[in-house]
Length: 299
Image (cartoon, rainbow, N blue to C red; front, side, top):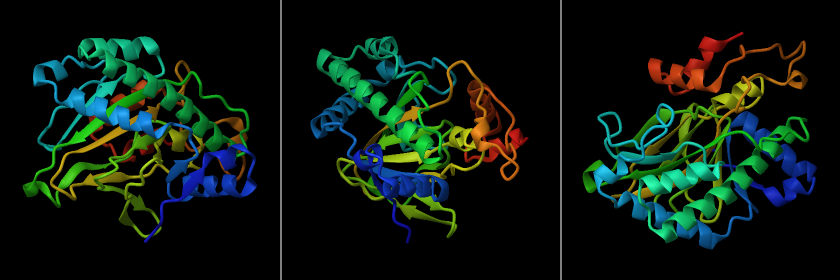
């Protein structure tokens, strides 16, 4: 069984060639890894979990005020495809005005607003740092992802005894560059596809760490070097499961295109340039949410 690599961001940031090589290998081979040494206080992680649980306890009509800003960015109610799953969405967690507007629409109490805002700021710092280190592992030092939009998604899986063994959410890849996920420290169920074995393997919770997944934009931007990991969630216990994801999406104003440094005779350009919003709509319209839509953009 494959082990999910754990990367110490302090070592990678200090110029450790070994840790940078381990990061690159995880991104290329599996498309998934853990990070420690990230600097997000455990108390803030716990407070955010409490804030998210409070938001999910709101009445349904209040939850639905978290309306879409772009397609699929708002509240997701349980559906026939994913009957156990619901989620809040925050269109750009990197923009303080968007965070304020999200809390205002839900009429969140002051302590919840403060927690969501503080967490969004720290997670934006973290995801920009992780993306920069991933780029550096490919030889692209000094790349900034500071102005790339970041979508928040707060997830709850409403598990019951009857649902144990059933899917919590279907197999998919993430559409953006990469995702940083805070898991439920008590309830597992996340599984990623090991491409070498062709089998899904569990990602057991490890309190204090974050899971990072490479998404479709990450594969396209890297000219196919980074692996967009397929993953799913299985119901493993009859208790609610809460997770919080931050998605680094794509360039805000530019198209997604591999940097020239990653294109050469041995690595011809694999994907046409595309705008992220167009790709997101393509995934939604075709229902191809496990990386298949990228094949439509082959160069």
